[in-house]
Image (cartoon, rainbow, N blue to C red):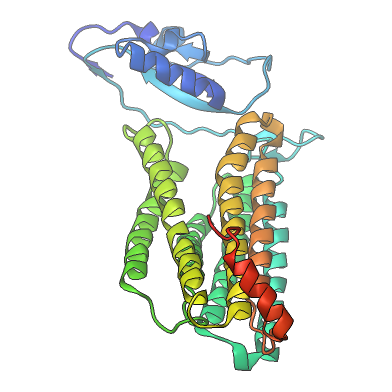
Length: 378
């Protein structure tokens, strides 16, 4: 420890902090930059340097009773002005199983995640096999978007498999053994592909028209770079913590970019619905246009519902769930994602004969009346 004067050793120390209390501590620091976090009522102080034994072999040994079980992070604070501290710190944070023998390095609320992610990866691999079967059965109606949707499922399955291995090794050994790198790679590809597929389906690319308009290309040119930025922010947040200077800023960047992307991918769907409404007034194919309008309106509702659930409901679950049930939010997110994939893939599956278009004159007239209705206005 180096300093200009003689620092007060009681102003340097280690403490535990729960995620709920972290926000309160950050507010205290914002309100008073000179405030020493070691004096906060929201922390659980372990010891300060005043509690260390005399040099040269300074040490501290103490057992703390668990009075408030929760998920805690370990922090070090230096509140002594104009002083610097350097040290090598090795921490080992774990829970013991019911028998008190095996170490579990995942927090109590996340210890179920390896099994959860592995089960969902198996479901997605089965989903992929069924999708390839559907495409093979209707290969005359397969478009490029269907192949891209298949690649999306591959990335989702591999992403979950790597997440399962990552959490498994962290649970058993405390380190991910490189699986976190694969997880972030597949997560990056999967997220970019997901937003790209939603935009392309919303534009009707490959199954309604073989090209993209300039404004649709611009949406992709906005969404894809923003997703690159969002994934960088996600990695910074996941691999670091509040101890880095710009951690809060990265959280804000991730939130802002995600909101922009979610809004941007809605525009192509709205444009397609309006374009179909305009086309229906001139081409004389009311029944066909009604079917397309119905499909895209349902797609619009499903996308909005998925984005709302995974961004707001899942966040609420993570916020209100007790520390032992943090895995419930992850389970809800994966269930919603699987349901979203299943619905979208069913809606836009390759079909050689579509029952929507086998209509008689009476149904054609009924479709024309329906198109005059305002129910398709957003």
